[in-house]
Image (cartoon, rainbow, N blue to C red; front, side, top):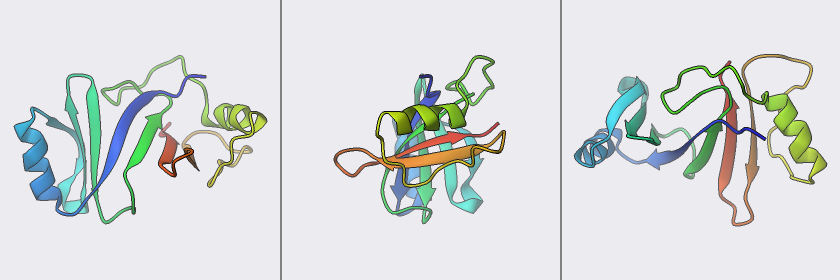
Length: 123
């Protein structure tokens, strides 16, 4: 099961303060739009997303089809196959991908401690 690139999506109160804080730790902006209240930042292989006002909790995020630079990879497991495998294992999904479609889709679930897990395929 290839989940793709991993990052932590942080629910921040002030994206400008958060950006400055993580820049002090050596993170650089990889993508996003601060005017839309979201940024993706990277320090070596560590990737975080800063999201202001978009969700309630921090989210563990996986991106099938991407590497840690948000570049396409050829060998990946499609989100719909991941979904089928997880459901066979008895994992309860909060949001499911439409298995009749192709391309971008996402699924969400909660880990045993209530932490949101997002698998978000962009291609």
